[in-house]
Amino acid sequence: MFHLDERKKKQPKEILGAAAWRLLHRLAVAVPRPAFHRRLLACVCALYPCPDCSDHFKGLPCVAGARSCPAAMDDPVSFWFDAHNAVSKEVHPRRPPAPRAVLDQYATATATAPEN
Image (cartoon, rainbow, N blue to C red; front, top):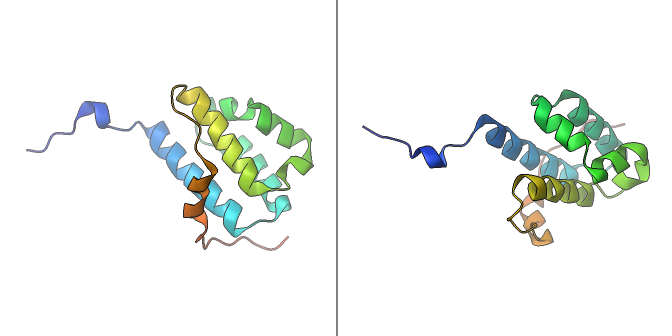
């Protein structure tokens, strides 16, 4: 019989978070329109299914700044990258921030969004 190592099992929040970040990074590369990302940020803040995660995310200085200053979303790739590093710093304080080179893996994104 197969037994999972309990220490390696991911919690639902971790699974949801990893999938959400993959989607947000892919969309940032595939749909570089700031207006789309301002609406996407509003949706993430309002509709993210984990209330603890949503409240934590909304409280980050980079997110609060982007919500009050639309120009902060002029570079969606950098915004989502910085937001992800800010979340990671709080959730995993010993882990170093991700280098910008990791964004290369999203360069082949094929997601599309509706026109404004």
